[in-house]
Length: 369
Image 1 (cartoon, helix red, strand yellow):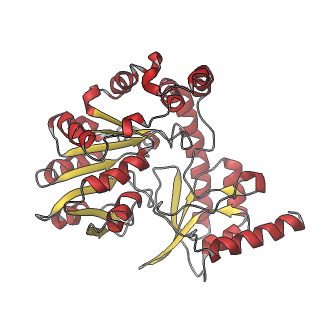
Image 2 (tube, helix red, strand yellow):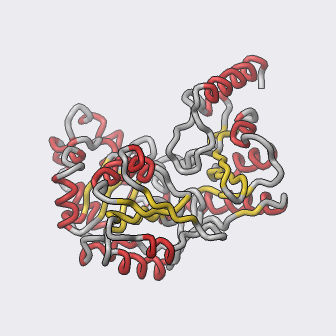
Image 3 (cartoon, one colour):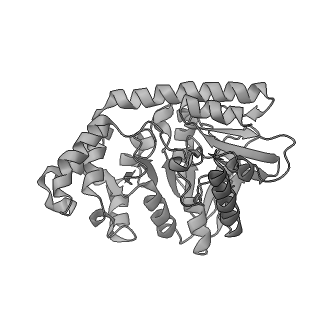
């Protein structure tokens, strides 16, 4: 690295930390410093993005739609059947879906929609929903993960009380990369939904193999208290295009649409909608991304294990492992080596969440440990 780049990195790192921009977030509630991009020689392993890019078919769909980018999506005839095609793909009806500009927007608004009581969630977990809830004054009951960093469903169920308005579960889990088996999760959803609403965040479900990749969407049509949220940001690599959706009983979708989600359907990007439909059809690209992710993940976990780290079995595109005998801020330490990741302190020690990049990126990561 040139002296200018070293100086830039030093100054940028200090500026970021001095401004209070956290690199230690494992739950997604904080953003990484701006202007920290690959053009500066940095490897971003902090945001769980798909390093292989969007589907070639999605790219072509964007090119075909770009001439109509000056129109709202509801004025483009090709997108009239967007929700119908999305519903058909997931085996539901149009009335079961509410599309949002990424699942992040959906989580943010769901926190507001269910702010009339407390929210039960795991700790740690993906932070948008619980942190939004806390900011607006909603009580959040956080149930610690088990020793193996898996959702403690029994304790979560017993934590529900008469004031609970929502239970939130991210499965596979972020940041712990663990998974609850479908049968267990289904039983939990059925029991918990007798008392309150249940939201299952399936952002990483596409990285699972059958039969573990069973979605809880199958439960929504007969149960107004069960909701599922999905995103195109992960396996479809569309994090920058911002598109996701909530699947729920038509009665629930109607309530959401009349309340906090009243204007979301007018805020969709025509380019993102076209790309999403094309990506759904490109199964080959999804399988390739999944296979490459699995290979790079296997390599990195093997190397971390050889070093003596406690590594949680990962079912996602990131790895969660425990540091030993490291003093200070590990994320800041790795930033100086041009690698962005997340680290944090918990009651049982320091833990790191590192996204799975390409195999070459993971080799560089391991070399710098």
